[in-house]
Image 1 (cartoon, rainbow, N blue to C red):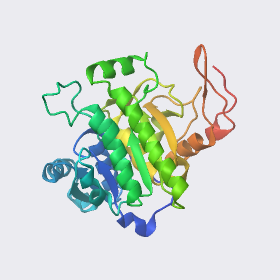
Image 2: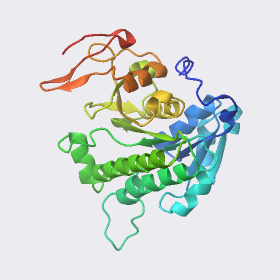
Image 3: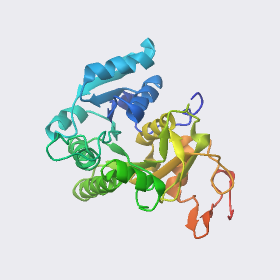
Image 4: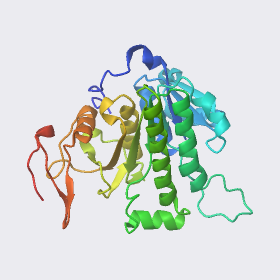
Length: 299
């Protein structure tokens, strides 16, 4: 991880470092990795979880003592919107890393951990609370292939997890509507970023130079949870990440992809349109315009 964050934009830093980044769903997976990444960079963060004690024990099992001072814990539940306002109050940014842990359930059983309650209603409730509390940035972790119903990832996840991809897409749409409404009624600079990762794994982080990014729904592949977490935390501090939807996987840069060695380059590429454009019959037809050392390449 060394060297990967040194390029970070200075936007929103200084005293705002004392304002934490909130991470919903910080007790496992990518949410936990967000906490670890931020704390090791001495960025104050808040684990927003159902069981703060269990979360703290887990975080402490991974995090060296010297970095634990940068983590605070708050009890909340995305299926109970009344608990969210206090949990997100005072946050600099908010990352929604929660997702359903149960798929199909019969009506006679408790179903609050299913996709409609977490990935749709929970995401919208969290973004609504964040907007109401003036949280500047909201990052939603969604899924690659979310608009491609014939993609193997879409088919498998929908079949096994109660149409989770459909509910995630509704969550994306709900979050964007929340911030569209905010932009029309307020002069604030609140914004959102939607991140669509590929299949998740627990490989070590490779850093920004190992990330392939796009702004459509074109990629296939996998990504380390640690790399995904880093991208989400970095998005909080990037002007170029405002109101952006990005898909991301690990892969070899170059060829049809821009060579970006820093997060600054990645987000500037995304916001400036210096990215491949989908074309029939090949993965991408590239139209780079001099960004990141690659230009005018074709499949």
